Length: 287
Length: 353
View 1: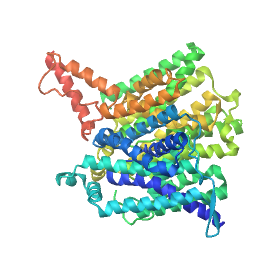
View 2: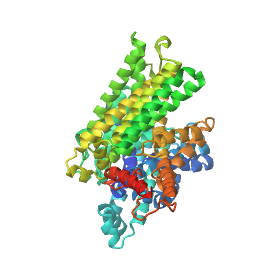
View 3: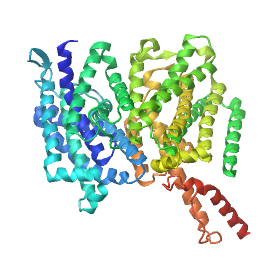
View 4: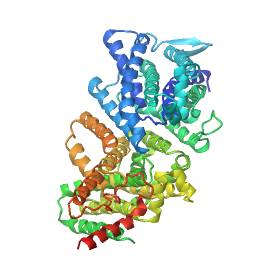
Protein backbone atom coordinates (compact mmCIF):
# COMPACT_ATOMS: atom_id res chain seq x y z
CA UNK A 1 0.00 0.00 0.00
CA UNK A 2 1.26 3.38 -0.87
CA UNK A 3 1.65 6.22 1.59
CA UNK A 4 -0.49 8.49 -0.60
CA UNK A 5 -3.48 6.21 -0.03
CA UNK A 6 -2.88 6.27 3.70
CA UNK A 7 -2.55 10.04 3.80
CA UNK A 8 -5.67 10.56 1.70
CA UNK A 9 -7.57 8.21 4.03
CA UNK A 10 -6.43 9.98 7.18
CA UNK A 11 -7.38 13.38 5.79
CA UNK A 12 -10.76 12.23 4.43
CA UNK A 13 -11.39 10.67 7.83
CA UNK A 14 -11.43 14.16 9.30
CA UNK A 15 -14.66 14.88 7.43
CA UNK A 16 -16.21 11.63 8.66
CA UNK A 17 -15.29 12.57 12.21
CA UNK A 18 -17.01 15.93 11.76
CA UNK A 19 -20.22 14.26 10.55
CA UNK A 20 -20.01 11.59 13.23
CA UNK A 21 -19.42 14.13 16.02
CA UNK A 22 -22.85 15.71 15.57
CA UNK A 23 -24.61 12.33 15.45
CA UNK A 24 -22.71 11.15 18.51
CA UNK A 25 -23.47 14.36 20.43
CA UNK A 26 -27.21 14.09 19.75
CA UNK A 27 -27.32 10.39 20.58
CA UNK A 28 -25.21 10.80 23.69
CA UNK A 29 -27.25 13.66 25.14
CA UNK A 30 -30.75 13.22 23.74
CA UNK A 31 -30.64 9.41 23.24
CA UNK A 32 -32.02 10.22 19.79
CA UNK A 33 -30.97 8.46 16.60
CA UNK A 34 -31.22 11.40 14.26
CA UNK A 35 -31.95 9.97 10.83
CA UNK A 36 -32.14 13.53 9.46
CA UNK A 37 -28.50 14.30 10.26
CA UNK A 38 -27.46 13.72 6.65
CA UNK A 39 -29.97 16.36 5.58
CA UNK A 40 -28.51 18.81 8.13
CA UNK A 41 -25.11 18.20 6.51
CA UNK A 42 -26.57 18.80 3.06
CA UNK A 43 -28.41 21.89 4.32
CA UNK A 44 -24.99 23.31 5.22
CA UNK A 45 -23.69 22.59 1.74
CA UNK A 46 -26.76 24.03 -0.01
CA UNK A 47 -26.93 27.16 2.14
CA UNK A 48 -23.22 27.77 1.53
CA UNK A 49 -23.86 27.33 -2.19
CA UNK A 50 -26.21 30.33 -2.03
CA UNK A 51 -23.27 32.51 -0.95
CA UNK A 52 -20.56 30.79 -2.96
CA UNK A 53 -22.28 30.18 -6.29
CA UNK A 54 -24.55 33.24 -6.33
CA UNK A 55 -22.45 35.86 -4.52
CA UNK A 56 -18.98 34.54 -5.35
CA UNK A 57 -17.82 34.16 -1.75
CA UNK A 58 -15.08 31.83 -0.69
CA UNK A 59 -16.57 28.66 0.89
CA UNK A 60 -14.53 29.23 4.05
CA UNK A 61 -16.08 32.69 4.44
CA UNK A 62 -19.53 31.23 3.89
CA UNK A 63 -18.85 28.45 6.42
CA UNK A 64 -19.80 30.32 9.64
CA UNK A 65 -22.96 31.66 8.02
CA UNK A 66 -23.99 28.18 6.89
CA UNK A 67 -23.28 26.80 10.39
CA UNK A 68 -25.37 29.53 12.01
CA UNK A 69 -28.22 29.15 9.54
CA UNK A 70 -28.51 25.37 9.98
CA UNK A 71 -28.33 25.77 13.77
CA UNK A 72 -31.17 28.27 13.60
CA UNK A 73 -33.23 25.79 11.57
CA UNK A 74 -32.45 22.88 13.89
CA UNK A 75 -33.28 24.63 17.18
CA UNK A 76 -37.06 24.99 16.68
CA UNK A 77 -37.20 21.61 14.96
CA UNK A 78 -35.94 19.99 18.15
CA UNK A 79 -37.84 22.24 20.54
CA UNK A 80 -41.25 22.05 18.87
CA UNK A 81 -41.24 18.73 17.08
CA UNK A 82 -38.66 16.22 18.28
CA UNK A 83 -38.55 16.77 22.04
CA UNK A 84 -42.28 15.99 22.42
CA UNK A 85 -41.70 12.84 20.32
CA UNK A 86 -38.96 11.72 22.73
CA UNK A 87 -41.60 11.49 25.45
CA UNK A 88 -43.74 9.17 23.33
CA UNK A 89 -43.07 5.62 22.19
CA UNK A 90 -39.61 4.42 21.19
CA UNK A 91 -40.75 4.30 17.57
CA UNK A 92 -41.89 7.92 17.33
CA UNK A 93 -38.56 9.84 17.28
CA UNK A 94 -37.06 7.44 14.72
CA UNK A 95 -40.04 7.72 12.41
CA UNK A 96 -40.22 11.48 13.00
CA UNK A 97 -36.59 12.09 12.01
CA UNK A 98 -37.05 9.75 9.04
CA UNK A 99 -39.96 11.97 7.98
CA UNK A 100 -37.85 15.12 8.40
CA UNK A 101 -35.14 13.52 6.28
CA UNK A 102 -37.62 12.83 3.46
CA UNK A 103 -39.03 16.35 3.58
CA UNK A 104 -35.50 17.79 3.64
CA UNK A 105 -34.44 15.86 0.53
CA UNK A 106 -37.57 16.94 -1.30
CA UNK A 107 -37.03 20.59 -0.35
CA UNK A 108 -33.44 20.49 -1.66
CA UNK A 109 -34.76 18.97 -4.86
CA UNK A 110 -37.49 21.57 -5.28
CA UNK A 111 -35.30 24.59 -4.46
CA UNK A 112 -31.91 23.62 -5.90
CA UNK A 113 -32.79 20.96 -8.48
CA UNK A 114 -31.53 17.40 -8.62
CA UNK A 115 -28.43 17.99 -10.75
CA UNK A 116 -25.05 17.67 -8.98
CA UNK A 117 -23.64 20.90 -7.52
CA UNK A 118 -20.35 21.75 -5.92
CA UNK A 119 -18.78 24.70 -4.12
CA UNK A 120 -16.05 26.09 -6.37
CA UNK A 121 -12.86 27.23 -4.65
CA UNK A 122 -9.27 27.64 -5.76
CA UNK A 123 -8.14 24.93 -3.32
CA UNK A 124 -10.85 22.43 -4.34
CA UNK A 125 -8.76 20.59 -6.90
CA UNK A 126 -5.24 21.78 -6.06
CA UNK A 127 -2.80 19.48 -4.38
CA UNK A 128 0.01 20.23 -1.99
CA UNK A 129 2.90 18.16 -0.67
CA UNK A 130 2.77 17.13 2.97
CA UNK A 131 5.91 15.33 4.03
CA UNK A 132 6.61 14.24 0.47
CA UNK A 133 3.07 12.97 -0.21
CA UNK A 134 0.69 14.61 -2.66
CA UNK A 135 -2.69 15.35 -1.09
CA UNK A 136 -5.66 17.54 -2.02
CA UNK A 137 -5.52 20.92 -0.30
CA UNK A 138 -9.20 20.88 0.58
CA UNK A 139 -8.79 17.74 2.69
CA UNK A 140 -5.91 19.34 4.59
CA UNK A 141 -8.12 22.36 5.31
CA UNK A 142 -11.05 20.20 6.39
CA UNK A 143 -8.77 18.09 8.56
CA UNK A 144 -7.49 21.16 10.38
CA UNK A 145 -11.05 22.49 10.67
CA UNK A 146 -12.17 19.17 12.17
CA UNK A 147 -9.40 19.28 14.76
CA UNK A 148 -10.36 22.84 15.69
CA UNK A 149 -14.09 22.02 15.96
CA UNK A 150 -13.40 18.84 17.96
CA UNK A 151 -11.24 20.82 20.38
CA UNK A 152 -13.89 23.55 20.67
CA UNK A 153 -16.63 20.96 21.28
CA UNK A 154 -14.50 19.20 23.87
CA UNK A 155 -13.67 22.48 25.61
CA UNK A 156 -17.30 23.65 25.66
CA UNK A 157 -18.49 20.32 27.07
CA UNK A 158 -15.85 20.07 29.78
CA UNK A 159 -14.96 23.64 30.76
CA UNK A 160 -18.08 25.79 30.51
CA UNK A 161 -21.29 26.05 32.53
CA UNK A 162 -23.36 25.36 29.42
CA UNK A 163 -21.33 22.23 28.74
CA UNK A 164 -21.83 21.13 32.32
CA UNK A 165 -25.57 21.56 31.90
CA UNK A 166 -25.48 19.48 28.72
CA UNK A 167 -23.57 16.71 30.49
CA UNK A 168 -25.98 16.84 33.42
CA UNK A 169 -28.97 16.54 31.09
CA UNK A 170 -27.27 13.65 29.32
CA UNK A 171 -26.49 11.79 32.52
CA UNK A 172 -29.89 12.14 34.17
CA UNK A 173 -32.51 14.43 32.62
CA UNK A 174 -34.97 13.98 35.49
CA UNK A 175 -32.52 15.04 38.18
CA UNK A 176 -31.21 17.83 35.99
CA UNK A 177 -34.75 19.15 35.63
CA UNK A 178 -35.33 18.93 39.40
CA UNK A 179 -32.15 20.96 39.94
CA UNK A 180 -33.63 23.72 37.81
CA UNK A 181 -32.07 23.07 34.43
CA UNK A 182 -34.35 23.62 31.47
CA UNK A 183 -33.78 20.25 29.84
CA UNK A 184 -35.90 21.02 26.78
CA UNK A 185 -33.79 24.07 26.06
CA UNK A 186 -30.57 22.13 26.60
CA UNK A 187 -31.81 19.50 24.15
CA UNK A 188 -32.59 22.15 21.55
CA UNK A 189 -29.19 23.82 22.06
CA UNK A 190 -27.43 20.48 21.73
CA UNK A 191 -29.29 19.77 18.50
CA UNK A 192 -28.41 23.24 17.22
CA UNK A 193 -24.74 22.66 18.06
CA UNK A 194 -24.76 19.29 16.35
CA UNK A 195 -26.45 20.90 13.34
CA UNK A 196 -23.73 23.55 13.17
CA UNK A 197 -21.06 20.82 13.18
CA UNK A 198 -23.02 18.99 10.49
CA UNK A 199 -23.19 22.15 8.38
CA UNK A 200 -19.41 22.63 8.67
CA UNK A 201 -18.98 19.05 7.44
CA UNK A 202 -21.42 19.78 4.64
CA UNK A 203 -19.55 22.84 3.40
CA UNK A 204 -16.23 20.98 3.32
CA UNK A 205 -17.86 17.97 1.62
CA UNK A 206 -19.36 20.34 -0.92
CA UNK A 207 -15.93 21.76 -1.75
CA UNK A 208 -14.30 18.34 -2.00
CA UNK A 209 -17.04 16.52 -3.97
CA UNK A 210 -20.15 17.27 -5.95
CA UNK A 211 -23.42 16.70 -4.13
CA UNK A 212 -27.11 16.04 -4.92
CA UNK A 213 -30.23 16.21 -2.74
CA UNK A 214 -29.81 12.53 -1.79
CA UNK A 215 -26.12 12.75 -0.85
CA UNK A 216 -27.08 12.98 2.82
CA UNK A 217 -27.88 9.30 3.19
CA UNK A 218 -24.40 7.85 2.69
CA UNK A 219 -23.02 10.61 4.93
CA UNK A 220 -25.57 9.71 7.62
CA UNK A 221 -24.54 6.07 7.54
CA UNK A 222 -20.86 6.98 7.57
CA UNK A 223 -21.57 9.12 10.62
CA UNK A 224 -23.31 6.22 12.34
CA UNK A 225 -20.40 3.96 11.47
CA UNK A 226 -18.09 6.49 13.13
CA UNK A 227 -20.30 6.51 16.20
CA UNK A 228 -20.42 2.71 16.35
CA UNK A 229 -16.65 2.58 16.08
CA UNK A 230 -16.10 5.26 18.70
CA UNK A 231 -18.74 4.42 21.24
CA UNK A 232 -20.65 7.18 22.99
CA UNK A 233 -19.27 10.00 25.03
CA UNK A 234 -15.79 10.90 23.91
CA UNK A 235 -14.85 13.58 21.38
CA UNK A 236 -11.37 12.14 20.98
CA UNK A 237 -12.82 8.71 20.28
CA UNK A 238 -15.01 10.13 17.52
CA UNK A 239 -12.00 11.78 15.93
CA UNK A 240 -9.94 8.59 16.07
CA UNK A 241 -12.85 6.57 14.68
CA UNK A 242 -13.36 9.00 11.80
CA UNK A 243 -9.69 8.79 10.84
CA UNK A 244 -9.71 4.98 11.15
CA UNK A 245 -12.79 4.79 8.92
CA UNK A 246 -11.18 7.11 6.37
CA UNK A 247 -8.08 4.92 6.19
CA UNK A 248 -10.11 1.71 5.87
CA UNK A 249 -12.23 3.23 3.13
CA UNK A 250 -9.22 4.56 1.27
CA UNK A 251 -7.52 1.16 1.44
CA UNK A 252 -10.64 -0.66 0.27
CA UNK A 253 -11.04 1.68 -2.70
CA UNK A 254 -7.47 1.03 -3.79
CA UNK A 255 -7.98 -2.73 -3.30
CA UNK A 256 -11.52 -3.42 -4.60
CA UNK A 257 -12.28 -0.34 -6.72
CA UNK A 258 -14.45 2.73 -6.14
CA UNK A 259 -17.83 1.04 -6.41
CA UNK A 260 -17.33 -0.94 -3.18
CA UNK A 261 -16.33 2.14 -1.15
CA UNK A 262 -19.54 2.48 0.84
CA UNK A 263 -20.29 -1.26 1.02
CA UNK A 264 -17.08 -1.75 2.98
CA UNK A 265 -18.07 0.98 5.44
CA UNK A 266 -21.54 -0.48 6.05
CA UNK A 267 -20.27 -4.02 6.46
CA UNK A 268 -17.59 -2.78 8.84
CA UNK A 269 -20.31 -0.96 10.80
CA UNK A 270 -22.31 -4.18 11.23
CA UNK A 271 -19.23 -6.21 12.11
CA UNK A 272 -18.24 -3.71 14.80
CA UNK A 273 -21.76 -3.82 16.22
CA UNK A 274 -21.50 -7.60 16.34
CA UNK A 275 -18.12 -7.94 18.01
CA UNK A 276 -17.71 -4.74 20.03
CA UNK A 277 -21.09 -3.05 20.51
CA UNK A 278 -19.61 -0.61 23.03
CA UNK A 279 -17.27 0.80 20.38
CA UNK A 280 -13.59 0.27 19.71
CA UNK A 281 -12.36 3.17 21.78
CA UNK A 282 -14.37 2.62 24.90
CA UNK A 283 -14.33 0.18 27.78
CA UNK A 284 -17.86 0.04 29.18
CA UNK A 285 -21.20 0.06 27.39
CA UNK A 286 -23.60 2.54 29.00
CA UNK A 287 -26.76 1.57 27.17
CA UNK B 1 -58.16 -20.40 20.81
CA UNK B 2 -60.14 -17.36 21.76
CA UNK B 3 -63.21 -16.30 19.86
CA UNK B 4 -61.46 -13.22 18.45
CA UNK B 5 -58.63 -15.34 17.10
CA UNK B 6 -61.10 -17.77 15.53
CA UNK B 7 -62.97 -14.92 13.87
CA UNK B 8 -59.69 -13.49 12.53
CA UNK B 9 -58.57 -16.83 11.09
CA UNK B 10 -61.98 -17.51 9.52
CA UNK B 11 -62.11 -14.03 8.00
CA UNK B 12 -58.59 -14.42 6.61
CA UNK B 13 -59.46 -17.81 5.10
CA UNK B 14 -62.68 -16.46 3.59
CA UNK B 15 -60.90 -13.50 1.98
CA UNK B 16 -58.20 -15.76 0.56
CA UNK B 17 -60.77 -18.21 -0.86
CA UNK B 18 -62.78 -15.42 -2.43
CA UNK B 19 -59.59 -13.95 -3.95
CA UNK B 20 -58.87 -17.36 -5.50
CA UNK B 21 -62.45 -17.67 -6.72
CA UNK B 22 -62.47 -14.18 -8.21
CA UNK B 23 -59.06 -14.35 -9.91
CA UNK B 24 -60.17 -16.08 -13.19
CA UNK B 25 -62.89 -13.46 -13.74
CA UNK B 26 -60.72 -10.36 -13.34
CA UNK B 27 -59.19 -8.40 -16.23
CA UNK B 28 -55.43 -8.02 -16.54
CA UNK B 29 -55.35 -4.42 -15.29
CA UNK B 30 -57.19 -5.32 -12.09
CA UNK B 31 -55.00 -8.37 -11.57
CA UNK B 32 -51.86 -6.23 -11.90
CA UNK B 33 -53.23 -3.62 -9.50
CA UNK B 34 -54.18 -6.42 -7.12
CA UNK B 35 -50.67 -7.86 -7.22
CA UNK B 36 -49.19 -4.42 -6.46
CA UNK B 37 -51.53 -3.81 -3.52
CA UNK B 38 -51.09 -7.33 -2.11
CA UNK B 39 -47.30 -7.03 -2.29
CA UNK B 40 -47.41 -3.72 -0.47
CA UNK B 41 -49.73 -5.29 2.09
CA UNK B 42 -47.39 -8.22 2.68
CA UNK B 43 -44.39 -5.93 3.16
CA UNK B 44 -46.27 -3.45 5.36
CA UNK B 45 -47.79 -6.21 7.49
CA UNK B 46 -44.40 -7.89 7.93
CA UNK B 47 -42.98 -4.53 9.01
CA UNK B 48 -45.92 -4.23 11.38
CA UNK B 49 -45.10 -7.56 13.01
CA UNK B 50 -41.53 -6.35 13.51
CA UNK B 51 -42.14 -2.77 14.59
CA UNK B 52 -45.73 -2.72 15.77
CA UNK B 53 -45.77 -5.91 17.80
CA UNK B 54 -42.13 -6.48 18.65
CA UNK B 55 -40.83 -2.89 18.72
CA UNK B 56 -38.05 -3.32 16.17
CA UNK B 57 -38.22 -0.39 13.77
CA UNK B 58 -36.75 -1.68 10.52
CA UNK B 59 -35.68 0.54 7.66
CA UNK B 60 -34.38 -2.46 5.78
CA UNK B 61 -37.46 -3.80 4.01
CA UNK B 62 -35.74 -2.89 0.73
CA UNK B 63 -32.86 -5.20 1.60
CA UNK B 64 -35.21 -8.17 1.88
CA UNK B 65 -37.25 -7.22 -1.20
CA UNK B 66 -33.96 -7.09 -3.10
CA UNK B 67 -32.71 -10.36 -1.62
CA UNK B 68 -35.94 -12.16 -2.44
CA UNK B 69 -36.29 -10.61 -5.87
CA UNK B 70 -32.71 -11.21 -6.94
CA UNK B 71 -32.41 -14.73 -5.54
CA UNK B 72 -35.62 -15.81 -7.29
CA UNK B 73 -34.54 -14.08 -10.50
CA UNK B 74 -31.05 -15.58 -10.46
CA UNK B 75 -32.36 -19.09 -9.83
CA UNK B 76 -34.81 -18.79 -12.71
CA UNK B 77 -32.36 -17.14 -15.07
CA UNK B 78 -29.54 -19.63 -14.51
CA UNK B 79 -31.46 -22.92 -14.39
CA UNK B 80 -34.56 -24.58 -15.80
CA UNK B 81 -36.55 -24.89 -12.57
CA UNK B 82 -40.11 -23.64 -12.05
CA UNK B 83 -41.00 -20.39 -10.31
CA UNK B 84 -42.09 -22.24 -7.16
CA UNK B 85 -38.49 -23.20 -6.46
CA UNK B 86 -37.56 -19.56 -7.04
CA UNK B 87 -39.94 -18.63 -4.23
CA UNK B 88 -38.44 -21.22 -1.91
CA UNK B 89 -34.94 -19.91 -2.61
CA UNK B 90 -36.13 -16.33 -2.06
CA UNK B 91 -37.56 -17.26 1.35
CA UNK B 92 -34.44 -19.22 2.30
CA UNK B 93 -32.04 -16.44 1.29
CA UNK B 94 -34.05 -13.84 3.21
CA UNK B 95 -34.06 -16.07 6.28
CA UNK B 96 -30.30 -16.47 6.06
CA UNK B 97 -29.85 -12.70 5.74
CA UNK B 98 -32.09 -12.19 8.77
CA UNK B 99 -30.09 -14.71 10.79
CA UNK B 100 -26.83 -13.00 9.86
CA UNK B 101 -28.24 -9.57 10.71
CA UNK B 102 -29.55 -10.81 14.03
CA UNK B 103 -25.99 -11.22 15.33
CA UNK B 104 -25.05 -7.52 15.25
CA UNK B 105 -28.51 -6.00 15.58
CA UNK B 106 -30.70 -7.89 18.00
CA UNK B 107 -28.55 -7.72 21.09
CA UNK B 108 -28.28 -3.95 21.01
CA UNK B 109 -30.80 -1.34 22.00
CA UNK B 110 -33.56 -0.87 19.47
CA UNK B 111 -32.26 2.31 17.85
CA UNK B 112 -29.27 0.54 16.39
CA UNK B 113 -31.65 -1.90 14.72
CA UNK B 114 -33.12 0.91 12.61
CA UNK B 115 -29.72 2.25 11.59
CA UNK B 116 -28.28 -1.20 10.96
CA UNK B 117 -31.19 -2.22 8.75
CA UNK B 118 -30.87 1.07 6.85
CA UNK B 119 -27.16 0.35 6.36
CA UNK B 120 -27.85 -3.14 5.04
CA UNK B 121 -30.45 -1.81 2.61
CA UNK B 122 -27.95 0.68 1.15
CA UNK B 123 -25.14 -1.87 1.23
CA UNK B 124 -27.18 -4.41 -0.74
CA UNK B 125 -28.15 -1.82 -3.33
CA UNK B 126 -24.52 -0.76 -3.72
CA UNK B 127 -23.32 -4.37 -3.86
CA UNK B 128 -25.91 -5.28 -6.52
CA UNK B 129 -24.82 -2.29 -8.58
CA UNK B 130 -21.30 -3.69 -8.60
CA UNK B 131 -22.12 -7.39 -8.93
CA UNK B 132 -21.39 -8.16 -12.57
CA UNK B 133 -22.73 -11.75 -12.54
CA UNK B 134 -26.14 -10.40 -11.43
CA UNK B 135 -26.20 -7.83 -14.21
CA UNK B 136 -24.71 -4.87 -12.31
CA UNK B 137 -26.65 -1.63 -12.41
CA UNK B 138 -28.60 -2.76 -15.49
CA UNK B 139 -30.13 -5.69 -13.65
CA UNK B 140 -31.38 -8.86 -15.30
CA UNK B 141 -34.38 -10.20 -17.16
CA UNK B 142 -36.31 -13.24 -15.99
CA UNK B 143 -37.17 -16.03 -18.46
CA UNK B 144 -40.67 -14.98 -19.53
CA UNK B 145 -41.87 -18.52 -20.26
CA UNK B 146 -41.41 -19.64 -16.65
CA UNK B 147 -42.68 -16.55 -14.84
CA UNK B 148 -46.26 -16.73 -13.53
CA UNK B 149 -48.64 -14.26 -15.17
CA UNK B 150 -52.14 -12.88 -14.70
CA UNK B 151 -54.36 -14.94 -12.38
CA UNK B 152 -51.46 -17.21 -11.32
CA UNK B 153 -49.37 -14.27 -10.15
CA UNK B 154 -52.40 -12.73 -8.45
CA UNK B 155 -53.06 -15.93 -6.50
CA UNK B 156 -49.39 -16.10 -5.58
CA UNK B 157 -49.46 -12.52 -4.29
CA UNK B 158 -52.67 -13.33 -2.39
CA UNK B 159 -50.99 -16.30 -0.69
CA UNK B 160 -47.95 -14.20 0.30
CA UNK B 161 -50.19 -11.43 1.66
CA UNK B 162 -52.25 -14.07 3.50
CA UNK B 163 -49.06 -15.45 5.05
CA UNK B 164 -48.23 -11.96 6.29
CA UNK B 165 -51.74 -11.49 7.67
CA UNK B 166 -51.60 -14.97 9.20
CA UNK B 167 -48.31 -14.17 10.93
CA UNK B 168 -49.86 -11.00 12.34
CA UNK B 169 -52.99 -12.86 13.50
CA UNK B 170 -50.82 -15.48 15.18
CA UNK B 171 -48.67 -12.84 16.88
CA UNK B 172 -51.74 -10.92 17.99
CA UNK B 173 -53.55 -13.91 19.49
CA UNK B 174 -50.85 -16.19 20.88
CA UNK B 175 -48.83 -16.43 24.04
CA UNK B 176 -45.77 -15.89 21.87
CA UNK B 177 -47.19 -12.59 20.64
CA UNK B 178 -48.07 -11.58 24.18
CA UNK B 179 -44.49 -12.12 25.28
CA UNK B 180 -43.31 -10.21 22.21
CA UNK B 181 -45.44 -7.18 23.05
CA UNK B 182 -44.28 -7.43 26.64
CA UNK B 183 -40.68 -7.12 25.40
CA UNK B 184 -41.73 -4.17 23.25
CA UNK B 185 -43.34 -2.39 26.16
CA UNK B 186 -40.76 -3.08 28.83
CA UNK B 187 -37.75 -5.11 27.91
CA UNK B 188 -36.29 -5.33 31.41
CA UNK B 189 -39.56 -6.38 33.00
CA UNK B 190 -40.14 -9.04 30.36
CA UNK B 191 -36.61 -10.37 30.74
CA UNK B 192 -37.08 -10.36 34.51
CA UNK B 193 -40.13 -12.56 34.11
CA UNK B 194 -38.07 -15.08 32.20
CA UNK B 195 -38.80 -14.13 28.58
CA UNK B 196 -35.77 -14.57 26.35
CA UNK B 197 -35.58 -11.21 24.58
CA UNK B 198 -33.11 -12.35 21.93
CA UNK B 199 -35.00 -15.52 20.99
CA UNK B 200 -38.37 -13.81 20.75
CA UNK B 201 -37.04 -10.98 18.62
CA UNK B 202 -35.30 -13.49 16.38
CA UNK B 203 -38.49 -15.53 16.11
CA UNK B 204 -40.28 -12.39 14.87
CA UNK B 205 -37.47 -11.21 12.60
CA UNK B 206 -36.94 -14.40 10.62
CA UNK B 207 -40.53 -15.12 9.45
CA UNK B 208 -41.18 -11.42 8.79
CA UNK B 209 -38.03 -11.26 6.67
CA UNK B 210 -39.02 -14.43 4.80
CA UNK B 211 -42.38 -12.90 3.96
CA UNK B 212 -40.74 -9.71 2.66
CA UNK B 213 -38.38 -11.90 0.63
CA UNK B 214 -41.36 -13.78 -0.85
CA UNK B 215 -42.97 -10.44 -1.66
CA UNK B 216 -39.70 -9.46 -3.36
CA UNK B 217 -39.91 -12.58 -5.52
CA UNK B 218 -43.49 -11.64 -6.45
CA UNK B 219 -42.24 -8.16 -7.37
CA UNK B 220 -39.55 -9.71 -9.57
CA UNK B 221 -42.15 -11.95 -11.29
CA UNK B 222 -44.42 -8.95 -11.79
CA UNK B 223 -41.73 -6.67 -13.25
CA UNK B 224 -39.95 -9.50 -15.18
CA UNK B 225 -36.96 -7.16 -15.61
CA UNK B 226 -35.35 -6.21 -12.30
CA UNK B 227 -32.54 -3.84 -11.39
CA UNK B 228 -30.94 -2.51 -8.18
CA UNK B 229 -32.75 0.82 -8.58
CA UNK B 230 -36.06 -1.06 -8.75
CA UNK B 231 -36.14 -3.89 -6.19
CA UNK B 232 -33.40 -2.50 -3.93
CA UNK B 233 -34.86 1.01 -3.94
CA UNK B 234 -35.16 2.55 -0.50
CA UNK B 235 -38.76 3.46 -1.32
CA UNK B 236 -39.71 -0.13 -0.33
CA UNK B 237 -38.49 0.60 3.18
CA UNK B 238 -40.22 3.96 3.14
CA UNK B 239 -43.53 2.55 1.94
CA UNK B 240 -43.50 -0.21 4.53
CA UNK B 241 -43.02 2.31 7.34
CA UNK B 242 -45.44 4.82 5.88
CA UNK B 243 -48.26 2.38 5.19
CA UNK B 244 -48.04 0.61 8.53
CA UNK B 245 -47.66 3.81 10.58
CA UNK B 246 -50.44 5.68 8.78
CA UNK B 247 -52.86 2.79 9.02
CA UNK B 248 -51.87 1.87 12.56
CA UNK B 249 -48.79 -0.04 13.69
CA UNK B 250 -49.58 -2.75 16.19
CA UNK B 251 -53.07 -3.46 14.90
CA UNK B 252 -54.10 -6.25 12.53
CA UNK B 253 -56.03 -4.19 10.02
CA UNK B 254 -53.93 -1.02 10.29
CA UNK B 255 -51.57 -1.93 7.44
CA UNK B 256 -54.55 -2.92 5.25
CA UNK B 257 -56.06 0.53 5.76
CA UNK B 258 -52.62 2.15 5.39
CA UNK B 259 -51.92 0.47 2.04
CA UNK B 260 -55.24 1.74 0.72
CA UNK B 261 -54.79 5.28 2.01
CA UNK B 262 -51.15 5.68 0.94
CA UNK B 263 -51.54 3.97 -2.43
CA UNK B 264 -54.75 5.68 -3.51
CA UNK B 265 -54.17 8.94 -1.65
CA UNK B 266 -50.50 9.55 -2.47
CA UNK B 267 -48.74 7.11 -4.78
CA UNK B 268 -51.50 7.03 -7.43
CA UNK B 269 -52.36 10.73 -7.28
CA UNK B 270 -48.82 12.05 -7.34
CA UNK B 271 -47.15 9.71 -9.80
CA UNK B 272 -45.90 12.64 -11.88
CA UNK B 273 -44.81 14.99 -9.10
CA UNK B 274 -42.26 12.94 -7.20
CA UNK B 275 -40.96 15.85 -5.12
CA UNK B 276 -44.36 16.92 -3.86
CA UNK B 277 -45.24 13.32 -3.11
CA UNK B 278 -42.09 12.95 -1.01
CA UNK B 279 -42.84 16.15 0.93
CA UNK B 280 -46.35 14.90 1.63
CA UNK B 281 -45.15 11.44 2.66
CA UNK B 282 -42.60 12.88 5.06
CA UNK B 283 -45.06 15.37 6.48
CA UNK B 284 -47.70 12.68 6.89
CA UNK B 285 -45.25 10.53 8.85
CA UNK B 286 -44.40 13.45 11.14
CA UNK B 287 -48.05 14.40 11.66
CA UNK B 288 -49.09 10.84 12.44
CA UNK B 289 -46.32 10.16 14.98
CA UNK B 290 -46.84 13.58 16.56
CA UNK B 291 -50.61 13.80 16.77
CA UNK B 292 -52.12 10.34 16.17
CA UNK B 293 -49.33 7.91 17.06
CA UNK B 294 -51.67 4.94 17.10
CA UNK B 295 -52.52 5.40 13.41
CA UNK B 296 -55.74 5.98 11.54
CA UNK B 297 -57.43 2.59 11.90
CA UNK B 298 -57.13 2.20 15.71
CA UNK B 299 -58.06 5.87 16.06
CA UNK B 300 -61.21 5.34 13.99
CA UNK B 301 -62.03 2.20 15.98
CA UNK B 302 -61.65 4.06 19.26
CA UNK B 303 -63.84 6.91 18.05
CA UNK B 304 -66.59 4.64 16.80
CA UNK B 305 -66.49 2.57 19.98
CA UNK B 306 -66.69 5.72 22.07
CA UNK B 307 -69.67 6.87 20.03
CA UNK B 308 -71.29 3.47 20.57
CA UNK B 309 -70.68 3.42 24.30
CA UNK B 310 -71.84 6.98 24.84
CA UNK B 311 -75.33 6.00 23.81
CA UNK B 312 -77.54 6.22 26.90
CA UNK B 313 -78.48 2.52 27.10
CA UNK B 314 -74.92 1.23 27.00
CA UNK B 315 -73.07 3.77 29.12
CA UNK B 316 -72.41 2.51 32.59
CA UNK B 317 -69.71 3.32 35.12
CA UNK B 318 -67.85 0.01 34.98
CA UNK B 319 -67.68 0.06 31.25
CA UNK B 320 -64.18 0.44 29.86
CA UNK B 321 -64.15 2.11 26.50
CA UNK B 322 -61.57 1.00 24.01
CA UNK B 323 -59.43 -1.18 26.23
CA UNK B 324 -58.73 -4.14 24.05
CA UNK B 325 -57.62 -3.09 20.64
CA UNK B 326 -55.83 0.20 21.18
CA UNK B 327 -52.40 -1.31 20.90
CA UNK B 328 -50.42 1.82 21.36
CA UNK B 329 -51.41 1.75 25.03
CA UNK B 330 -48.11 1.38 26.76
CA UNK B 331 -49.83 -0.67 29.44
CA UNK B 332 -47.99 -3.98 29.53
CA UNK B 333 -51.14 -5.71 30.74
CA UNK B 334 -53.13 -4.82 27.70
CA UNK B 335 -52.87 -8.19 26.02
CA UNK B 336 -54.05 -9.94 29.14
CA UNK B 337 -57.13 -7.72 29.26
CA UNK B 338 -58.48 -9.15 26.10
CA UNK B 339 -60.43 -12.10 27.32
CA UNK B 340 -61.93 -10.46 30.41
CA UNK B 341 -62.83 -7.56 28.17
CA UNK B 342 -64.71 -9.80 25.79
CA UNK B 343 -66.48 -11.40 28.70
CA UNK B 344 -67.43 -8.09 30.24
CA UNK B 345 -68.86 -6.76 27.01
CA UNK B 346 -70.82 -9.99 26.72
CA UNK B 347 -72.19 -9.50 30.21
CA UNK B 348 -73.23 -6.00 29.25
CA UNK B 349 -75.22 -7.48 26.43
CA UNK B 350 -76.77 -10.05 28.77
CA UNK B 351 -77.71 -7.50 31.39
CA UNK B 352 -79.23 -5.04 28.96
CA UNK B 353 -81.33 -7.80 27.50
